[in-house]
Length: 514
Image (cartoon, rainbow, N blue to C red; front, side, top):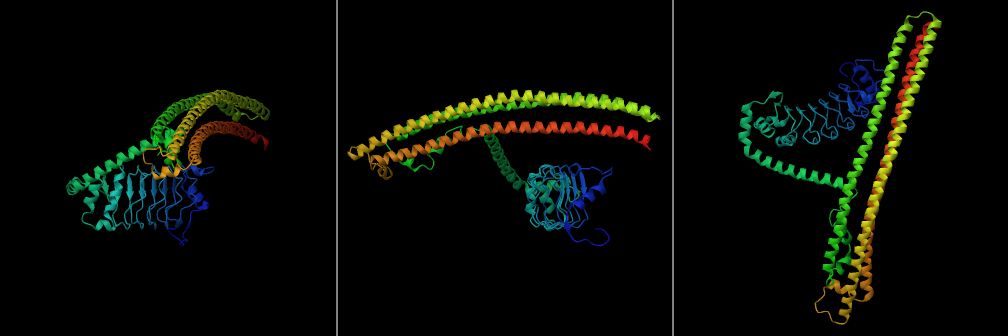
């Protein structure tokens, strides 16, 4: 602590947090939820370990300066933080900040940090204080080029500041910086920096541009793949299924050496790819239809809830207006019988209001149930139709595999017969010679390869059908669970309101009971 006996370094505990919240609230703290707290000061508390902060999910400003913290941890849930002060601690490594993507102002002043790192996700960072640390590599500053919103940087008190080129280097490599070490970067410094590092900066910009293009291309590719997965047709937009059938199939490799099989394979691949692409295209269009149907349902549900809330709010407002008027009148009444008569009228009105609100909620439940049944029927029809379609397409894939197998086996047996009769003109490779020993060897190899191919087709079909049906079941369950939660919350709100008004009415009778 700042004064008195020095406490032993310790862990943030619930008692400390409750005390801190109560100290810093300007209004009555009774009933304050930790997830509602926006700012929290935990400075000068001799904290060694960050703990118990996960409930402060709305926190935007956190002071942890002037403690004994050695490691950044326990901040993962504070995703709304925009301001974080960890200055005057004993931190050696920047870590544990990946989820704090809204951070704008971050201070590590006076710690033991030697490397600027692990800040990649903090793209909104505007102010960064790293003064009085142990950063020794001036080139480490280049890492900060990725933070395009960074305008204020403090590095004073680090070993890198002793280099003559420090100011011009930082100015050159961080051209958008406005303040360095609490001083405005003047135009002369910028001009000197640009002239000195012009060629190095230009080369770096070219490299960064190429990296950015690669990253953007990768992002687009990832987004496309995710769309394909959401439609359950990933890797069906080409010959991927065909290629997977022949991967790790040694028998197929040997059979491919048979004369004329290469042409069969080429035709098989082409026809198989056409079937898969048809599945892929239909999958994307069906995904679009399902998404539109889901959005239409959710929009309709939101509108129904909003309209119902508006009606309920009007009922409550009318009752409140009447209640305020009657309460004001009752405060003037001195006769107990007359007061009780007015209270009885208020209780009747409250009961009527409660019945109205509950009836309105019941109407909404019925309305949403009807909307949901229509939606469920439509989605089930879409899912069922899509599953039936893909099952037919996979049946075509199996037909193509069966046809290829029969043609390949026929070629194999004909070739074997020619070999046994010494009628084969061309020389055969050693791998094929091992196959063309007898009829059973050829048949066994072809059958093993055929079984492998059919298994790959069956597995892909099972995966697609299972994912589609699971999506439907999960969607229905989530919607039903959300509606149950909404209904329970609404009923609880109505009951709490009624109880609150009842208590207030009871309070009006108290003076008469002395």
